[in-house]
Length: 461
Image (cartoon, rainbow, N blue to C red; front, side, top):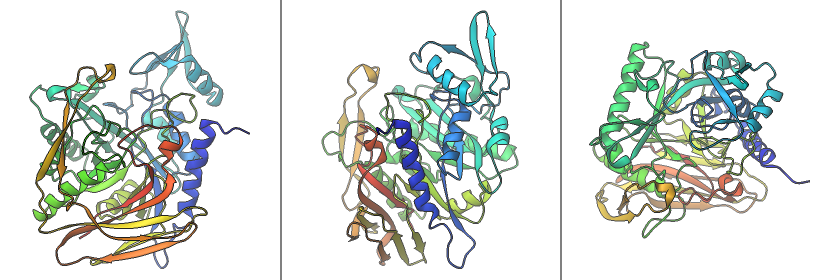
């Protein structure tokens, strides 16, 4: 029997969820691991699924929490109807007949009408969806937005905020990509967005929320480490996202770990300045879902967050993440992560036929944090729309150096620890398996995406 793309996506996500569930209860404590995704898209912007379908997919795959984060939209307009078209068309996609027929069959209560011979379907609001799908203590659904802007030389900047129940003033009236003044750099746009989110949160009474910098190596970006060095109040970024797909050139590695090097360059500088370290999240940024047939790789479930918290609430989850009690993953579930202020301990449960390596990564206090070289990557081909070449900074190999590596045999549990040396600025761990990452199993070709399933702990000091 041939496995369909939908079957594979759901089986992979469910297997991953079950692997984590078996280790959620922590001995002697009340906290447990919760699995979730904080970046996804629907027909409210440029996703290829109805919001009901997207949320159902995460729930049915065993996730504990999810957030819908459409571009520049919060999705609370109760009278928003989309026409059903024969095909998807270009970008943003149209609601095509094929996907509508699947939706109507699986969600018979959907609001549909005929106007002048055209079928229209109403998109459910986030309020309606939360009421329908969220169950306290079992499944958490959160509103969110991907702030999507374009500044100098057509370079994009995207940031997500989650669990604020309103849009940034004025942004929902903008296009799905809001054009900023032509001289605005990514650093300035990032600072402006972070200030807007802080102001919005304050206006709402400062509810628990999370804000993070998205896919820094997406092909329409020119994000560099300096953008987040300039913005130390940005505390999270996506270390793994399927959008990281510009081609490796020159000194750029083809192992999918340039994001790691970007991360260490920021944290080395922040640590020397006594600033808060940058933490990682991982999200599938899903646009194509198992429920909708497509020739594109289905990225559903390929990257996710594991958070150790005492309750399945935004307050508990985000408080844990802000303390570093979480890890990011693209297919590896950890048994435990502990840091006692000196020693980082990491354990990976045994998985039949799979071998793991735990690598401890540090930057020494005397390491040179300056740029040692730059690589120019031309933007060629019709898909680049005349965008300028990007210039990527290369940092010293002393930034983010592996100081200890512990490997196990196939089918073995692996555990290791590393104690901070006096000259270490911080330590973090990356767990690498010998399994291909889900994105590549499904046919992905993102050159800057990890080739094998991995997990990343937060940095500690």
